[in-house]
Image: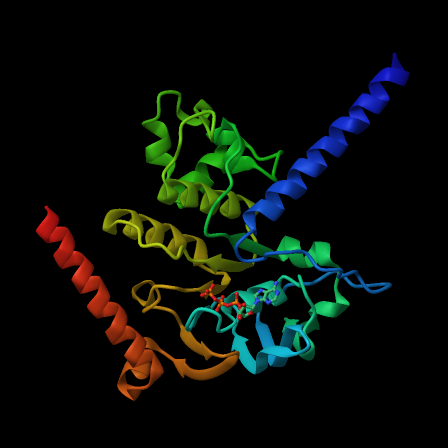
Length: 304
Ligand code: ATP
């Protein structure tokens, strides 16, 4: 009997680990496109996060040596602050996120968290310290409770509910036919993009990491959903160091610092108001997006 159950137990563990790896990879599909061959250096330390200050010091990076992607980016995110990265498509925003997660190593300069170079710490401790809220949260064909607790199998009911409340999805769940036992995913209740993202936020709240990497959805959501998501994101950002990869400027006006990237270089940085007053690239992007949003609103009003 023992001979049979032990291998089965082992297979169960392997199965769960593979599933975990798949969801982690799935979750990071957009932001962290592909894993690279990064290994821990011998005797690597465990990352010791004090406040979570992140310092990018003159970093450069290329995927392919013939094409530089980041060219000497320097940037400090003080502990507990929120920094938004903005810039045209292809300017290198997501690449900075991938480097922070050490999916690749920088080709020049360094990234440090509370003074520790990412290359000197174990990947496990780094990944434990960073919560990623991806554009698209992957849901399993299982209950909503399971989906929130995913990755923290030992979470208590109270912790799960607190995370759902923090992500402003608890009331929605309580209105479902079977509450937290409602099956979701492809074979269950299909959630909207905004609801899925809030499940992702609740999942990250449960993980409770000191550092957050938010990959904002590219597509415009309706105004109420957008507001709900922003409220959830504000709640989860409290007391954490946050890097937001932003596509819509209207969502990041309150960021402590906005960093404008263009072709792998920081071309402007400051607060929203300062950047508008400067009448540079950010101000032009803002004017462009505001005009587009107004046009979309007018079209909606016309259609109604
Ligand atoms: P977007 O707003 O469209 O998401 P981004 O600012 O996040 O863009 P990145 O995804 O960081 O831009 O890409 C920066 C550049 O690096 C782009 O030119 C892109 O084509 C290139 N790039 C991204 N991933 C890879 C990769 N795995 N291999 C080679 N080049 C890549």
